[in-house]
Image (cartoon, rainbow, N blue to C red):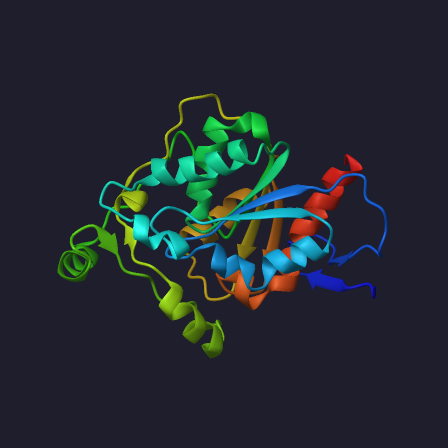
Length: 268
């Protein structure tokens, strides 16, 4: 098998990092990833590019689909909330009997994995936030729906479903067309409910990946990047790509994730 090389841009103060996929070899242990998609998505959005590449690097990968979205749209109802989505992922961990999991959340998925860390920390090793929200006990999140959005929700979403947001500007047209019919209106309570913090915040390894293209300084993700990039309790990476990095920078995304998995494999 030919060695693959994936390159990503790290923090400006850091050296540029290059990750090489390993040559074919015996592996006594592989890392286990559970990937949680963002709003209006599904496992389908990660299965197109990232999941196959990450599995090819030798790791075990589960891509969850949250209730009411993707191939589970038929389960949508007004009562679906953030707790429902947290339980979805906790169930994957329990029923697949997973331990030492690298739990990955993209965008809205950051709210979900934070909730899972509160309920299932004993099954986790590392939290990875991909251009994602990072709720805290001091700021548990919970979106206030604007009057304009609520008017559309009432008119087109039966009063409880939120329409998909616009695609990032750097996303290829063919991907936009492919994804459009697969994106689902999402139950509003998943956005408005704050994350529950019922246990002490676990001392898990944490990584933040900021996607810098198309970001206004007022973006919550831009603000998080400024906050976390110099925080010694976080590992920080910056990619010169748009918000949907799984479409626009899948190799760079896999380079970061596989690097985390390989470090866990080595016990680093």
